[in-house]
Length: 375
Image (cartoon, rainbow, N blue to C red; front, side):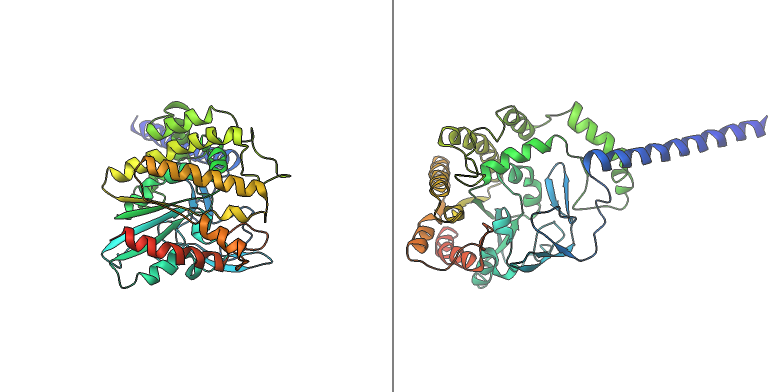
């Protein structure tokens, strides 16, 4: 009788183990085929990556939308440039944030323009400013991320707050409205990963299991969504017209520009994310500043639609900042002057991202304004 009981228990345990392995294998297959999620913690060997193709060092997932794999390194390379990317423990390009270098911190939040697409990290305007401010109480941290936009900044608030900033400079870019529309299209279908930036070996025994990720994703995406204030905003915006409606065709202007009749509507969608971001920082008494980069004014070169779109972006971002009592700085006057005086090329040829000269111009104009605001 005892032998039969033991045999039954062993059979049950083996069956449960086999079932568990089978479910894990199925979950891994489902995550790979449905969400393109495989070894999300494994860092690929150092190699060249073309910036406008799939990047194996970046993972798309909730709740952050997407991010670099911490501690990864690669070479961003095209026929025009080749630059080194070193990613820190928080998934941002540059040096470690673990130790505070000065008394106070200001974060520069933005997209690939801030991250430094196509230039060495030392040539990004934030790092130029950080070196200029070396004798002050402020250290300037670059938390730019390619593909960033207002909804991305809202989704990544926890990452920013984990750095314990005293102030934030949020940059607004010409492609923000289009990127917001594109981002929320894919957000609902992303897998949900716990503890991505602060992995714990013990907790990850559960959190990194493919079965847990799949079940958690189903729960977050299908059952409990939308579960918080930000997700409700995303959900409502996702119900509005698709981003392609009202978009200026690529034959007449850049693909991120919206026709005037639709611009205000698309700005209104992105404005909700900006309002959410400002509210969260101000509730924690973190000073908030806004800069409009305006670099799209010159890309494509001398294109009237690009210029008109940039002028609308400046008008609306400035009005929004003033309405909310936010100190505001625009690069557009300096960009116009550089264009009229035939100054240095501010963009990487044929690319649309700031060149070394573009980053230096931003730093030179932003520095005195920022010093005054941070007093």
